[in-house]
Amino acid sequence: MTKRHSKKHDHQTAFILGDQPGTYHATREIHHSDILALAEQILFERVQRSDVFNSPDDTRRYLKVKLGSREAEVFAALFLDNRHRLIAFEELFYGTIDGCSVHPREIAKLALTLNAVAVILAHNHPSGVPEPSQADKTLTNRIKESLSLLDIRVLDHLVVGGTEVVSFAERGLL
Image (cartoon, rainbow, N blue to C red; front, side):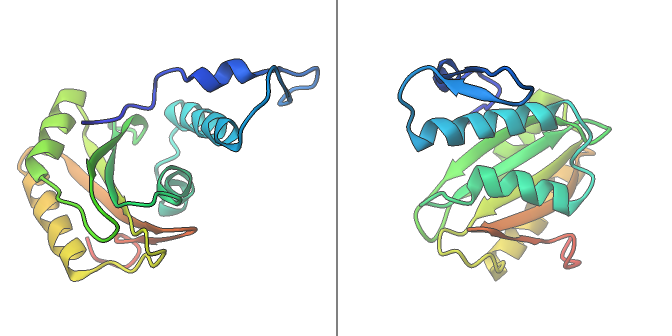
């Protein structure tokens, strides 16, 4: 049920490199989803090669692109190595417009499989209001306690509501 984003996408054949660095030309008629998918792939490749997940602001920018426009709730995790470099971004659980069932055991299994030492949790609020609910806070504590038994740190939990993102770490909720 997970969705890996390290695969090459079909939209890449819609563009070729331009004459100037950082420019592209369309090879066929393109849809806005092609452009968004290409932007997502470029962003993923950049963050995968760097130490960008050292601050809530870095993570916030990444997650706005990944979750900000989703119409139903999606719970995801960024699995990180010991230098906080991205190993994988995984969409783990899918819900409705106002909720999602999350299972800490599945997060732990995947973290161990990926050999992650740290995790950043994230989910969206399709309402556009990123204010964490009491259920969000309780769930975060359950996941943090579960993963700590395996020496996996939860660095943050971000709630995305459209273009706004709330960080549990910044609010002292972790």
